[in-house]
Image (cartoon, rainbow, N blue to C red; front, side):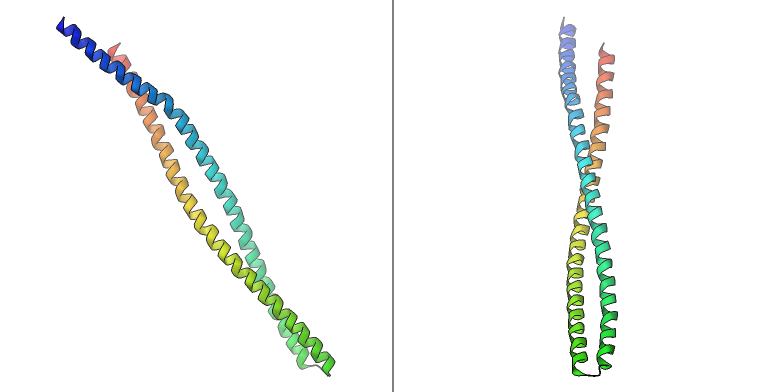
Length: 161
């Protein structure tokens, strides 16, 4: 009789443990699915940030080329001013040089803004890539835990059936 009571108590413990594991097993797939969704959203965000970075880099290079071209045009305008035959030609060359200087200055300012934006996107990208790796690791660990818990539950059920 005592042995039967001990066996029933043990069976009750196993049953409670099995219910806990079963509850956890039911909850884990939903949490894993949510985490996979978060991984996918973060990957899309990173893709958008990479695209923005590529566009900003392309614009920065374009501005650098425009500044270089502007400097070449400025050199030509200086040469033109030096060859000016009268005050009217000199004034026209001076206006052209001032316009070119303003254009170069504007492009350099835009390039600086792009450099700042590129730095911000790079730091954001690095941060989000770190978050993505953490999330992927977490999903992997949860999946392993789910498989292990499922295997343990099945072993316990088979052992006591």
